[in-house]
Image (tube, rainbow, N blue to C red; front, side, top):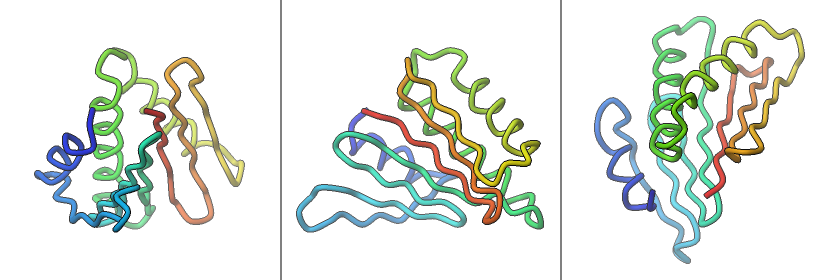
Length: 124
């Protein structure tokens, strides 16, 4: 998926991201309530919040991460299940940082418990 494809996809609802591109063209960042999408030539990274007191934002963050994973790895049929499982395991984990890497698919998920912030990183 190209940068332009990602911008088009995440410009529509439910994402509705606003975009900014570096003058050098090296990266593009999109932001929306509770989430940021950082597009680089070699990877794409979404950081989103999962606040315990705003379940609507947490649910939206999960949907946006699923959307990104599905867009970047369309052939990975079990990808959405993998991500949902990581989110569940992260929510139950007592560790301050929960991190899981799928080496074959070149995808990682990290949750920082203290801030309720998670990052999904996908290599291109």
